[in-house]
Length: 249
Image (tube, rainbow, N blue to C red; front, side, top):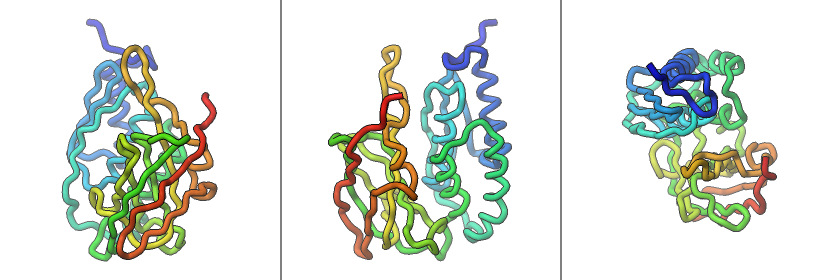
């Protein structure tokens, strides 16, 4: 019998890759019975029900950086979350142990750590802060950055870990911010924005996810110069400008 193998890891069969992905997620308490993974020629289809955009972003980011995965097709469905424990309880029961196990795994990056904080340290509760509509544009080297992912980190230390708004840039360079639900906006306050953009590249006649082309300083809240303010009434943000692309690798 001829087994399908992946181009990036020719020794890895699709069956083995599927098994390793599921075991990786299980070991880090990211797997649940509502999820399903299918693999064909290194192309991974993830489907099932998830309860937050943060959970979706974390799962997709880890899959896209998993060795042997050539492409990820997202068929996840966002559904209403059942009643959750408080953010403090969620962090106590899952966050510290998950991070210690993640450090021993093979998929680890600054963006993954940020997304892990979003997923584990925050769960929607009845005490969640009010959100306000936020729209904006991102330009990289003067051009739109379709598919770029933006995280908005609260400047106020007391709010860090409570809710981290995010946005994915559309084809025309515009974005709408989400916190608890799709495009619902962000809590009022001051934020530092970080950006990751794995711009698509052409390979073998297909479009695939390429390396991050955003300079590293814009990927960390400690070094990013992108600051925004969200008033209680919501806002149309000034254009976020990143003047240059990262050096080619």
